[in-house]
Length: 45
Image (cartoon, rainbow, N blue to C red; front, side):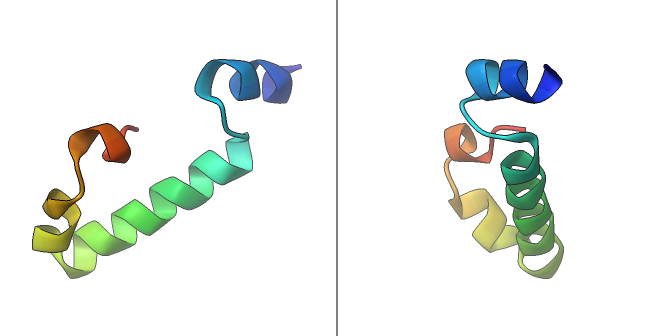
C-alpha cells in the first residue's frame, strides 16, 4: 500500500527515489558546483 501511494504521489517508486537521492548526494559530495548546476526543480527531495 505504501509503495502504491508513493508511486501515485511522487510519480516514482520508493527504490527509484532512493537511487535518485543517492546519486544526487554523491554528486553533491564530489562536485558541489555540478550539484548546484542542476535546476532545483530536478533536485527535489
